[in-house]
Length: 388
Image (spheres, one colour):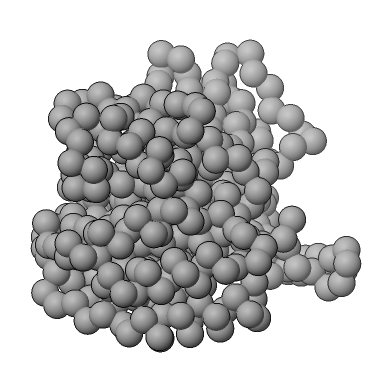
């Protein structure tokens, strides 16, 4: 499948939490190619916005023309616009794109910290952007400002009727532990239920959601599917936020990796064993982080970068000689030496193999074959890779 090309028209966030920085991280982690037309440069961090410098409309259009003419585009995400004139000029330029591509418009008005990012004239010009958009993704305060309607569904229906784009009503600004998002289209309403995630790391949530929707639309998914998968990306990024800064921190887009995306993903492996305590102790000693401990069910799950690994124990379980589990580690030799000093026996230490990997072999307490290895580019791109 071709790499989805996503054009991001938005402001820059010097703190890396929102704006084009959040968009680029999101599109990249999902497997797309992110291109940008910067509309404004901001000085901001997790505590607030200190300064905003709008980019002239002519420069915004030049960026759009430059990337589209050479690289092409499969979907567009529009975020912060520097002013009313820029909003109208961008709408006019995108209206002339041939062929037309999906456009996701996130009507950014106020930063998570509360700083205003759009004046009244700019908000008034948002109608021209919604008129060319496939979907708009305002939060609840933005919905009220766009329509003066207090009821969010009524406000969304107002925008759908006036501009023709779908509207995603986001429930994150609502009160309570239960949250609901609703996709309002001209002839359909789809809703999703969820629970609130207890975190202060919410800076860039709207940007991340909109750019994820744009990625999936650019990959050819239907709108409902794109929204559903984008929501999953955002929730995991919230759950795995790095906890940076003293205010509203950034999301953990870099930690989502294999949790959502296109196609099948091999991201979970389970081995069997007989002695739960020994199996758990062994894999913790290898350096895996345990995230599930269920001794009553004789089940444990571990996290290893973007993949989970689990053990299921049963007194009658037997290991399978035809299956081997491989853990790649860049510090192979040092790690094997450290584990050997801890008393973990190896069938052989690190060896260079004809297939260009370096690997060490051992067995877990149940007899499952385990390899620690270092392959680098030779795992996916050996000289004999098909198509080379």
